[in-house]
Image (cartoon, rainbow, N blue to C red; front, top):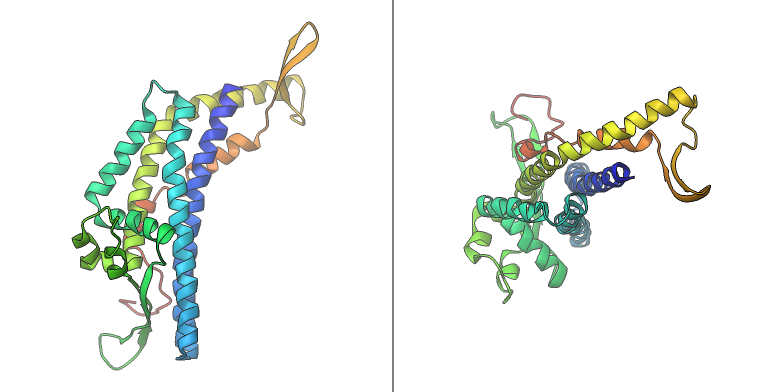
Amino acid sequence: KEAKAKLTTVLGIEEKFALLVQNYTEYERTLLDLSLKNMINQDWVWGGFMDDMLLVNRRIANLLTATTLYIDQVPRDLYCIFGDTAGADVEFKAARQAEAKNCLEFRVMRELRNHVQHRDLAIGNLSYPGSHKTDGRSGVRFGIEVALDVEGICSDPKLRIDPADLRADAAKDVTAVLRKSMDSLSRIHEWVSEKTEEVVVGALQKIDHALRIAEVEIGHLHGLAAVEYDDDNTQDVVYVFEDLPKRVRQMRTRYGNLKQCSGWYVSSGLGAGD
C-alpha cells in the first residue's frame, strides 16, 4: 500500500513536468506555424497581427501557469513522500532559488508569470523578420520574434526583481527567456528525480515482487489485489497492476535531455547554416 502510494505521488510529479513540457512544445510549434503562415500568405493586416499576438499570448499564459503549478505543488508531493523530517520540500526551494540566482531568464520568467496573472498580457511586440542566406543572393529565411512588454512590466509598483534585469538584452526576447527557463526547470526536475530515485526503486521492487508471486500462484493478474482481513471481514483492499510501475518507468526517462534545450532549434532549411 505504501509502495503504491509513493509511486502514485511520483507519477504525479512526472506528469506535472510533462504538462509543463507539453505547453512549452505547443509554444514552439505555434511559432513555427506562424512563421510558415507568414511566409506563404504575407497577409499584412492589422487584425491578423492581433490574432497572432493573442495566440502567442495564450501559449505563454498556459506555459507560465503550468510552470507555477509544478513549482508550487512538487514541494507538497515531496513532503508526502518523505515526511516532514527529511526536509525535501525545503531542499526543493533551495534548488529553485539557486536557479533564480544563476539564471536571469529564470528570474524574468517568474516575474512575467506574476505580470500575466495579475496585470496584463506578456507581449509588447510581434514581428516577422526575413533574412537572405550568407551569400546574399539565394534563399530567404523567415522567422518570428516575440518581444517582452518591458515598460509595462517595469511600471508595476510591486515589481520583485531589478528593472535592469528586465531591460537587459537577454530578457527582451520572450522566446529566449522561455528556452533558458526550460533549462532551469529541467535541472530542478533532474534534482527531484535524483532525490526520489531510492524511493522509486524500492517501491518498484516491492510491486514487481508481488506481481511475480501472483503470476506463479494465481496464473494471471486480472483484478489482482492485496487484501487485509480481520475475522473474515475485509479491512483494506489495495489493487496491484502492471500499468502503474510501467508508467512510472516510462515517464522518468521521457525528458532526460531537456536541461540543454535552449541551444536547440528546429529548421526545415536544407543547406548548411539553416
